[in-house]
Length: 221
Image (cartoon, rainbow, N blue to C red):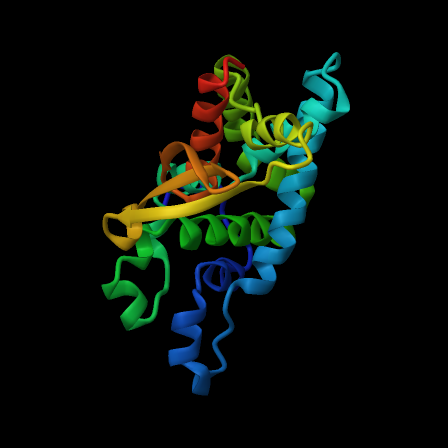
């Protein structure tokens, strides 16, 4: 794993890389999983990200800052960072989780990424945690700004549909395919009982956004 950080307390890193499935299999040895570190890392990451975009996008309104931060710290972004540093190679997984591809699963890797951020924070302080992740935050922010991918198509569609109080907007999972570590979801968006559009994505949320985007385009929005 390419961390570019040397731990004074290596046990913190080991804890950050310990999935609950591994901890459960070694409960008799007092092994702890990374869930508490994940909880802390989520907050540390959020603060680092907020500080960065606050300082670098001074003319961006609060609502757009919130959307940008959400896009940077989401599961998909953390998954990208985890792959970049090779985090999955050093994860401690239970036998079942490992055999089912847990080391490549976005949810597992993104959670472990947050745990590693917390471990760096506890071991070296806020400045080291910031140095560890800030390059990726900067890169991701610029990518999102370029692609305008902070647009929340679901919210935009909801606002349009709500103008007619008789219409009900809903989403329905149509199907999913692929192995656990590389799933593809297909979601339909419906107004009342009528299917308006269908979207695909690597998660249900992304598929819903894709479906809402297509629905807006079909409505001329």
